[in-house]
Length: 163
Image 1 (tube, rainbow, N blue to C red):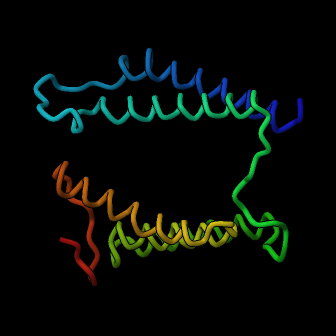
Image 2: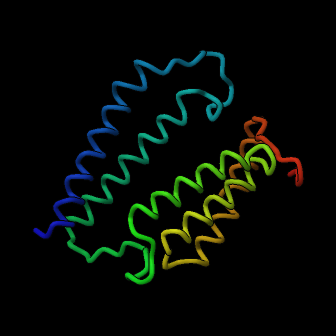
């Protein structure tokens, strides 16, 4: 069994165990929810359970990949001119600091777009078009859901306000 196959199998099993722990013990025991919530999406239990199920799905996917032995593609470009590991870590810290500083001025949606793009291009993704599309669509869809479906106020910036 190659190293990556064994690693995928161990990570998959760990993901399933973590998901089971969350789903059957931690969430029911430590997350409380009032009984009078009409919309299931607004329940404090809903999103932890969704994350637990997604963790299980990722674990199953890792186990399936380790069993089939398919060659894995990491999604990053081949080695070339890239910052050394400590330089990338420092650049990632700068992206995080910039995100923190830009949030009040640009708002959460626009800052998330920029942070996603900066991180994707820092690590030289092989899929730049998909990165740009995801950087734009994911924050907009999340804004639409939280602002218009869940009724949660998403922080807006000083320059451009979303409807």
